Length: 95
Length: 194
Image 1: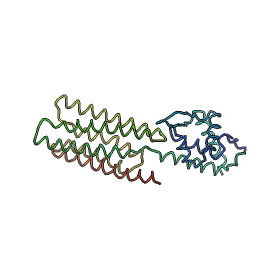
Image 2: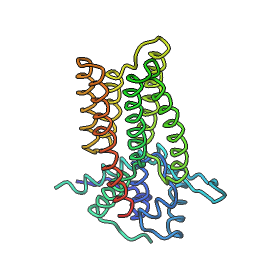
Image 3: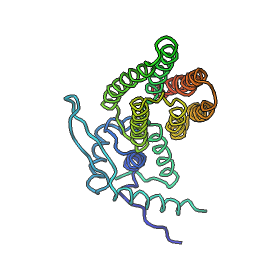
Image 4: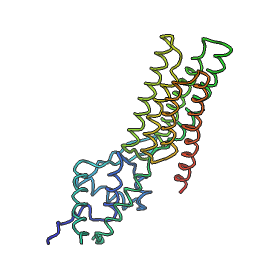
């Protein structure tokens, strides 16, 4: 049986963690994602940019109390890709 | 080159992160403690004024509602600035409680203006709904029990004397709001420091 190819954008530890985190929330701040994934700032920024370029997330930059604030949320395209990825993973795990 | 993930690792990452997001409910205990104390005091005030100053029973409810609304608004705005994440459940809970407050205020104001006594039994039944639903959404049993308690006490209060209605209402506030609110606070503090 041929397995469906896994989405290369999501088939990465940190990017998959970010998208899985955003699936359960409306929006999340950069610092929240940083804490929950345990990633470094630099690596997280790079992976967020890749997800943004793929159209999977929206990154909003603004200010709160004069401090920069970055908020991320999943797009419908990102949600679809995540669902497809989970389905594909299930195929791989099926005995 | 990205390190290769096995399907098992992928699944574990997804499960871990979904669980992390699930733990991200906003803190709610403040509101249960605040409203529990305020409405208990309002009920005590109603019992006292009914004895010593009949006709002014509604004053305590109005003061409690105004103080509670202002304190909730200020606290909510402050917490909102601090929270790093918003879930759909947070939004549902917030709007359910705002809707409840409007209904509660409308019921009390409507009854007061029409010259009826405060419909405490109906208010208790009404209070059971958001309390029970919040308990189910947070999967927090003391609030679920609190919501059921409000419904039971609300039904009983239609069949007892006004003084007993007051006592039942105070019991509802203590065991439906204050005790679960305190237990929720302990749980939230534990989650936050974990």
